[in-house]
Amino acid sequence: MARFGRIIATAGIVALAMSGSVFAADVPKFQIDTSWPKPLPKNWIFGQIGGIFVDKDDTIWISQRPRTVNDRDKRAQRGDKSKCCFTAPSVVQFDKDGNVLQAWGGPETAKGYDWPANEHGMFIDYKGNVWLGGNGENDGMVLKFTHDGKFLMQIGKSAKQTDSKDTTRVGRAADMVVDQATNELYVADGYFNHRVVVFDADTGAFKRMWGAYGKPPTDEKITYDPKVLPQQFNNPVHGIRITNDGQVVLSDRGNNRIQIFQKNGTFVKEFPVLRDSTAPGVTGSTVFWPDKDQSFWFTSDDPNGEIHILRRSDGQVVGSIGRVGRGPGEFENLHNIAIDSKGNIYTAEVQGQRVQRFRNLGGL
Image (cartoon, rainbow, N blue to C red; front, side, top):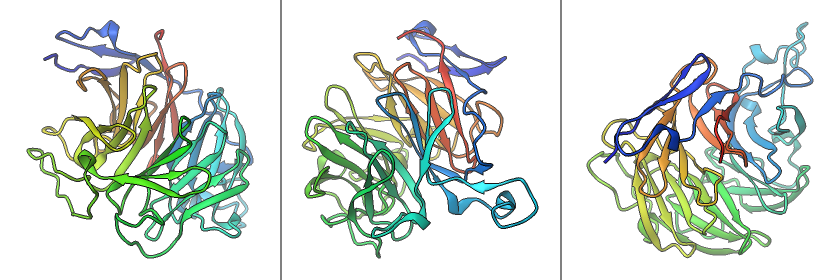
């Protein structure tokens, strides 16, 4: 088995050290782009960044948490004689160059629906609709909006949490994806529940759900043990995406693994990631290299401040990007990642309260 290498920044360029049967030329390489994003307009400032997604037009969306901006950072907003700052809306869209295209939403804008207490994952579907979730204490809903922020639908509600068998709501949902082939919404559910749950993306009707290995979900509390692959998901059930060939990829962050399913919930296989060498949290969100076969997968590692590159054929870690820190190309509480059609990677940090772009240095 090939040993994995480490991607490190030298003079701003990401290089790969590798041994074994995987060669450096085979693995994507990246460079931090310090010109992205551009300065925010209107003296805006971000709080924690919950979600990030790149849509079909390669525009970049984030969901950020206005209520986490501290008093010092919003002195102008509270009326002090200061130029800075004002809290940005919860949903922000950037163009490819890092300019803000539009921004909307937030707790004060919700009329007739429940805004999440703590904004989390987001997804832009094939119709251009924007989906949002939250992991606040009572967040039991997923919200659907038009591209420009008009409210369309709420699945679930803000209320005391129930359990992983409830078909009417979610439990602190972390992420979601809409399958264009079936117009179904798949939810990684979540920080309270322990399941994948599927709804109709137009009506919100419940369709099906499953736990780890395709078993019925339970609310069993899992304690991480590197020697044991538990039979249920751990909290949080954090990231979810669907491959080009129709596999549902679930990031079981608390168990340091990625599980792969058919769309009906049938278990296919799993990729344990660094289970023996680090604390839980290394599989936060998973995105795919945009070649035909999606031959590399990328997963975000919060405790180590890295993005790991996995070879899809066998799940082997073949490289890593980043480290913990506050400088360019480093991460403070790396949370979610996204990728565009050119292979550029975008990152969202919670404590770092920023987004960054890593440019793909090679072809596809």
